[in-house]
Length: 499
Image (tube, rainbow, N blue to C red; front, side):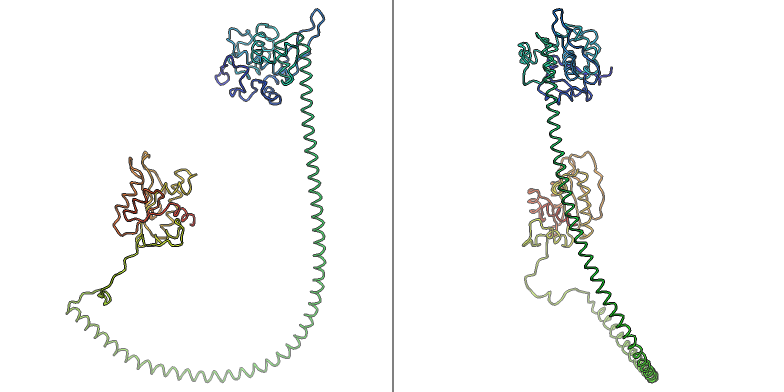
């Protein structure tokens, strides 16, 4: 027998524990604290579907006392479940021989697979039945006390009471068993009637709803039919109007064709006159073109001689100026006269000169202005940005998403971008996708990303536009003292979201 089919039983708690998770989804122990419908479902997969019938109470005694009817299926299931739980709490030597092979089974599996031995032991072995009865009496003392007093507890489930009566067998127990069975059937009948009433009410509500929907659909179809009829009448009136317009147009076309014939004759006469005039104009044009060509030839010959003399003069002057520059050893210069005038000169625009007036502190337009500065360098605190913008992703997905967005910024602005991640806890290099213009760095062992950012800022020359993206106040204060411009992580997140 494999270990997953058996489970230890805890003595003293056999009748109190709930469903056993090792019972392979089968039935579980019965507890009077569980509502009767739930106990039916719990025990139905245990002993109720085995087809094993517990023998009923003994036949009438010699004095002619009444016997008890055979146990109903729910009561039989509860009796077997009580016996299965108590058998699990007994030592194997204390069990009847027929139940010892099932000693290590869970209570639910024991009630299911050992239903026949359990039923036989309860009926034939008075010692085993006495132990089961004693445990039941200890577990439900109030119910046992009421039964020995000849009364059935009104608040208890009649099926549980019937099972306890069968096990304890107080004086007059066949009559008590019969009463409990009748009470159980009445309870089931009342529950079925209640469910039937709820179902009838639900069906009536559905019928009312369907009627309302049908009525609404009928009204809608009537409205649509009326609208279609109105549209049909309007279309018929429009067709009649169009037919009248077409007849008028046909009449106008016939009149126009007649007028067109007269106009064509007049146009033919005009064309003949125009062709004669065109021939005269072409003759004059040919004479004018010949005269123009003669004038062009004369002008070209005169202008060619003038251009030769002018080119020779310019070359002479250029060679003379070059010789004079060599003779005087004059070096080229970019200086202009205005550079010699003394005045207070304007400073070069830097990262701290980008104004953010009338803008939010995380307006991405400020970041665009900073990246437009010449030779700007953007340093990004990687995890500070990703955990601000998309914290639900894994670290690997956060890195991929951030680097893809930074690659797009580098391609559009041409700025140098360095993205720093915390690598103090990593065992080795981390593979990341490469994007042109984006440098990816991890801090060394024993060093956090903040320290690496400070070293990057310190390595830059004073005066270069340097922007550091981090919402860490300590990092922002440190890089600001070093001459860099800190911006919050939300500014870069908004810039990435804008695309």
